Image (spheres, one colour):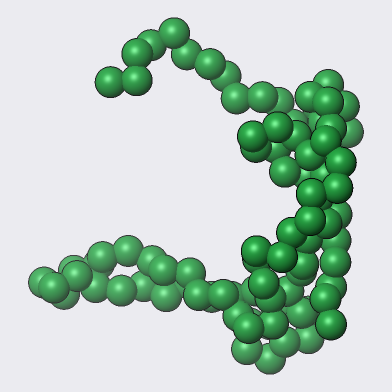
Amino acid sequence: MARLRLRLNPWPAPAIELADAPDPKCRDCEGHGGWPEDYADEHGEYGGTEYWHCPCWNPDRVRHLLPVPRWIAHLLFGWTPPAYSTEPPF
């Protein structure tokens, strides 16, 4: 059974989406939707962290509902567009 919630997706354009949420009663992830796991490289040093998703949650289950004008996203959600730079990308 899906546990649906509304969320604001600010990129590429602000929009309200209907998304799946992790099961708050899941015994594996305790409602967090997954867990981080550190791994080592071939020399035994810290190589990074990988995030594993729990089967109780599908983060790709999202439905785009409604585009939101940027000024409304700013008023309702406090979202501000990213600052643009005049510097070249290199």
